[in-house]
Length: 132
Ligand SMILES: [Zn+2]
Image (tube, rainbow, N blue to C red):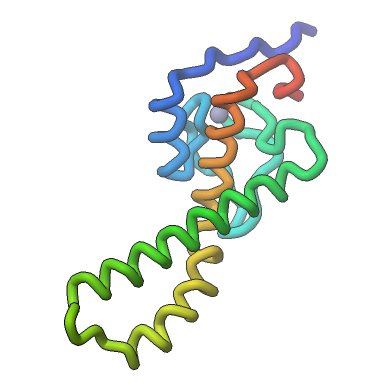
C-alpha cells in the first residue's frame, strides 16, 4: 500500500479566494461541512486534515471568527452613520447593532473556519502531518 501523495500548495491569493467561498484552500473542493457549524475532519477531495492535528485549532478559528464578525459589524455601523449623517437612525442602530454583533459570528462561522485554514497554511505550509 502506498502513502497518499501530498497535494501541491497553491499561492496565498488562490487559497484565500477558495476559502472565502467555503472551499478547501488546497484543492478548491467543496462539501467541507456536514452542517452550518460542523466541518468534516478531512477534505473529501484531497484528503488534508481540516484541523491540522493541533489542540486548540478550533480556538484559533473562533478568534478569527470574532475578529471578522466584529469588524463587519463595526463597518456596517460606521457606514450607516456616515451615510445618514447628520441625522442617523439611532433607534434602528440601538436595536440592530447589538443584534448584528450577536448574529454575525454565527453567520460567518464556516467562512471563518476555511479562512483560518488558509491563514494558517500561509504561515505553516502543508506537510506530511496534514494527511491521514
Ligand atoms: Zn482539498
